[in-house]
Image (tube, rainbow, N blue to C red; front, side):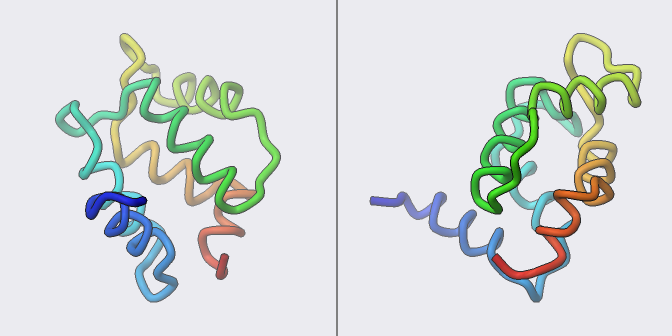
Length: 101
């Protein structure tokens, strides 16, 4: 069984009429515990979950390290907008996010 929060998150994630930026921002805001930043653990979890949802075969640890490098991450935190931008511009993820499941 899904909780109401899980249902709403899944519903928003699967809505093609909502831009990928808005969908990711909603999910990150909903589950983020850091003001404006994504923790390493949360970032890797989002990468794993979206990879699984869309059938993307990618090394989530490697992608997260790249995001950290590009953003000069301090203490494992990356700005939320930088995470969303990388995610929606990554060839595999952007292809999945801009098309239907």
